[in-house]
Image (cartoon, rainbow, N blue to C red):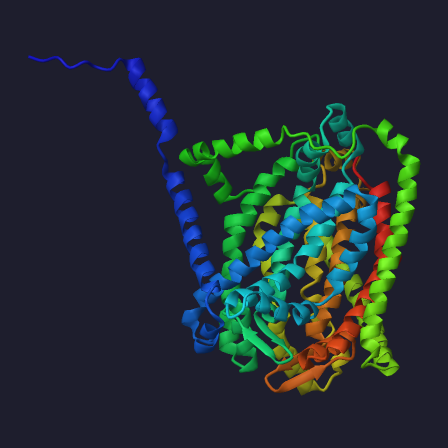
Length: 584
């Protein structure tokens, strides 16, 4: 008889504990399945993007519904490539603007101008460049499309991050300096987390803003150059051109499915994760929820695999990169710095004047003063439309945004719906607007105007929701204890609390409205075209004709109007919010 050694109870318990820590559970299986599926889709879409341009001619965009899944994948990859580029741009450019007065002097006016430059304006000058960069390959057209989507996403993210960095509470900044955190450590441990809620909501808005211009970015027509990349945007453009309502409906449905998917799988988990970055002294009772986030924190093996990345991040946070040692040192170089600031201002003005002269010299060779008069007249009309529409959108969406933002459970349900509405391309409504205007005989100058605000009013809503969501719980409880109600509550409590966020939303909505005027003031349905007098229609016609001098003139006039409008109204409000309405 042979007696086998038996494990002692404590050894069995230890072995079971080790297995429970290392072996995957059911949550790991689901998480790994999602990761593998994502990687496979990205690889497939990336491979198709590198195909030859001849393949587009051999297999042009088709309205066959069977192609929609492939088109949806291609469009989604372009959107996320653009959003990643926008995040990198935001962290670099917005941080420079917030930290350096000299950089701010250049960056903020540049952002004012760039957000007003229409997507068609960028496409006019970038399509040829990117196609020449990758001759014979779809990658050039893909880069042009991604860059166009980037220009519809980056500016509001940069403004949001800049606003948050400029309004970090003074007491938290003093505490971080008391702990002798370097500028690098202070950025990642204080400033970036403080800016996270607003940046996340603006990133969602940017994804939706990219959808608004996806038709122009995928169905590219600039002069004699025409490229139709496989995607939902080009599918929708073809459906509108052929007056196919069924295909339009399928495109909108595919877009809705995509929005729900990336909301559930990406944005809602990020919103739930970012809840810990809220600035407050009292914990909130209602917190955003996400089944994906809950699944991730319950995984076993996945969390073990992420430990090396966490260790690497902790080591990275030990790096001490500082822009300056102490305030005393800053005082020592104060006078020299002021001299450099003045010299920098002079240099910026000289370069601005030089650029303006180059543009003027280019335009005066082929254009006359009547062209300038036409562009400025259209600009004044479009400016009036923008002012009226932003005022109406503010009256409607500020109360709604506050109500949603103060109720996380409501925000959780509204989030995908708001993203869908913000992403809904105005092009889909053009057929109904054109048919209705033609049938009733009303003026296109009035009834095409609301199309401008359809894609831009959501900047106000998303930023107000972000501001209300980030409003400290202790301040809400204090207002409740002191029984502050009705208009006093709006005037003394919530409006000051969300005002910096509203200004950011209004600035980007204003710039977006100018941009949207390109597609809203010149609407078409098949062979039927309607035109509303304005600067947007002027630029759209010049772009379609490949008339580069008039495109440059239209963009220059639009940039001038936007810059002056921002400098006389929004920028002073920005400064007021930064100085008087920051949380301390």
